[in-house]
Image 1 (tube, one colour):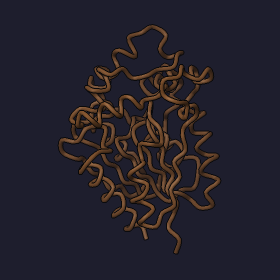
Image 2: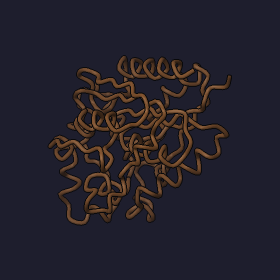
Image 3: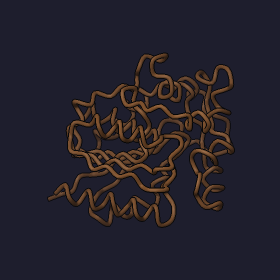
Image 4: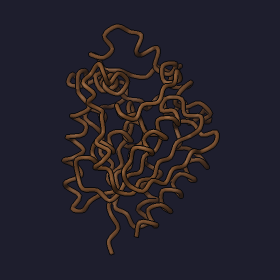
Length: 255
């Protein structure tokens, strides 16, 4: 029996390189993997943001991912990190899929959990007037405090240097759903396939309360893990190996 392909969706300000070490592990377990770059996220670091990025809505990302998923020939496992975890849910509500893997998922409009930590992470981005109509890039101080806290310095420097521009409109739709049409609301009744939800207890940009709310809302069987002491950025060292093993074990249990 063929194993389902895995569609991997990276997060805000990130690229498919997020999954460079996870993909070979999934492929060794028998899963074909696909990790598209979200619109304009393949632009080389250091260049100004692409002109079409500034007011791109989250719907455009989901439309792009739906087109990618329909090329796969079989219902995929949809795996997303951070904003990619929210995109995975929005996409899963649209298409037939074999299951969801949500790593440190961002909040849907109907899976919110109050915390000041995301504001502290993003304050230098969102305190600039008009940020919702402009491309955004997380500043180093915010990234260090809220995304890469607890991550080794060498990894942190490399990851911050690799951050790319993203859409202010998308960030606003996620952060302020009532003001932007609740476009990030997920139809959880349609998400009735098995799901794996993983979050770090020290995640400061998508805190554990979001993952808990998401897990409660999902209509299928949910395997939930909160990793003690882990930050938002889980793609390094032993922590990454632990998460990869968790995903492979969960996938094996689907068959």
